[in-house]
Image: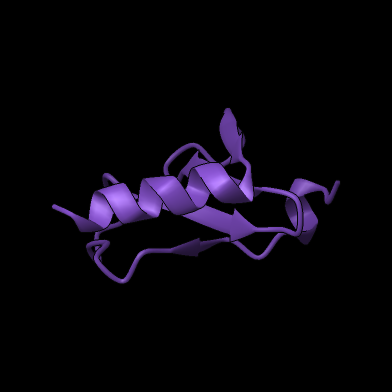
Length: 62
């Protein structure tokens, strides 16, 4: 597993320029990691590729 420092984290293009209420995502081979951009040292979720794909498809439905 990659360490947090090695992951390439990014924010959604829908995130505001103020940086509030944002999540960051880092995609790795075995999981997609999600964290609160305001608390980068805090907890994060690690989702399997299938779970992440299901979430993205659900979120795209509005």
